[in-house]
Length: 278
Image (cartoon, rainbow, N blue to C red; front, side, top):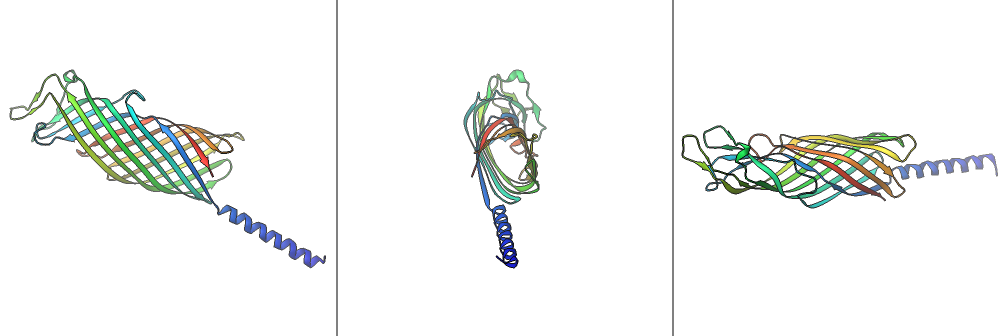
């Protein structure tokens, strides 16, 4: 074979190799992560009482902390990613149902009067049922992406829908100063909220040496329907041929502000997940 023919053949092989490498680099990859998150709940709920069920004002309810798993009735969680090169789209879906969370009446607002604090000695057994659906949808870009580390910046939307019902039981009713209204010793109040917030944040991993272990992290902050929402996760993962196992601590916080339902509300606890890649 002549040198020119050999050169053309080698050039053709080199071009074919480069094209194949570029094509592989642009192929899509997918991951699916079913996981279990066991959060404790802390925070305040602000209810507006309908006519006939209270003083015509509102009441603040403090809930938590409660023992993990003690009141958890349903927990469904799954996350997924679609990647192409340095870009990715991701989603995360969480449904939680807590029953009979230990709570207490914190204060009572009578019309035209500032809120009156309620002594804890009056509580005779108040509890709250919570149902919540959180859904995150976003996209990310990785300016750093190597075998040792990946760092991504992200943006997207998060939805939170919460239904709350509180059954209160006090040892005595609470009368309005000066008379004219009374907060009953027992009753039930319910409310719900649906929040859409824009979020920005970062996520990534850092491999520990040449091992299969890696540190993983996620953080976001946002606002919209909420005055403020933020989330943070940190954990450690181990990589297998089929995917990863991850053990982490996760914290999700919401504050609607003003006199809306969720006041400095926090979900925090351990999470365990398995990521399947294909």
